[in-house]
Amino acid sequence: MPRVSQEQARLNRERVVEVAAALFRERGLNGVGVADIMAAAGLTHGGFYGQFANKDALAVEAFDAALSEDRRGDVDTILANYLSLAHVQTPGKGCPLAALANDVSREGLGSPVRTRFTHGVERLASILANLTPKASRERRRQKSLATLSTLVGAVVLARAVNDEKLANDLLQAAHSSVAP
Image (cartoon, rainbow, N blue to C red; front, side, top):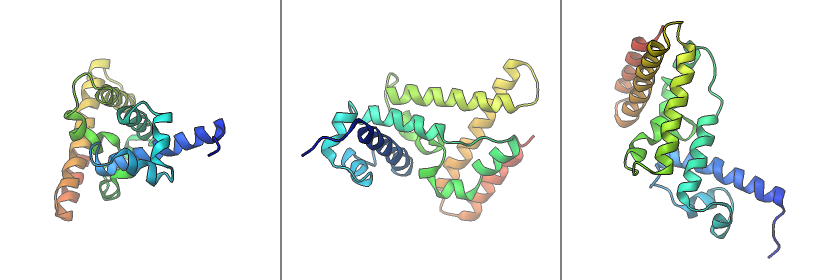
């Protein structure tokens, strides 16, 4: 079987990371295997270990890719998008913090995935702090951490309940508590 070019290998790797980012958010870190990810990417399972050391290495890259998806805007836009039923109903396209918090909490403290998740929390809190009206640095950090906790918690709960009205009420309550 002929080897793929370096360019094709790079494109294949990007595709695997993109697919993994969606599948991990949809099914959880332990809800999807390497074979599932490779099949969804349209590639064979055998090519995985030529690209990644292990599933955790892929999870770290996939988490970074998911976190890097463009979600910028002003505070009102961010809140409206984050606290929407569309975000709740499409975890594969949503925030990896809300989608993977429970899975990551079961990882060991030194886990690369947990370390990357921690960096993600810090990064999103920093983005929120920079959108917060001017206050002391510590006050903006505290407010951003409270806001991030409220946003993620509301989405996690809204995804867990089987009552769409309650899910929407959770999202609206969170919005009311954090809106400027």
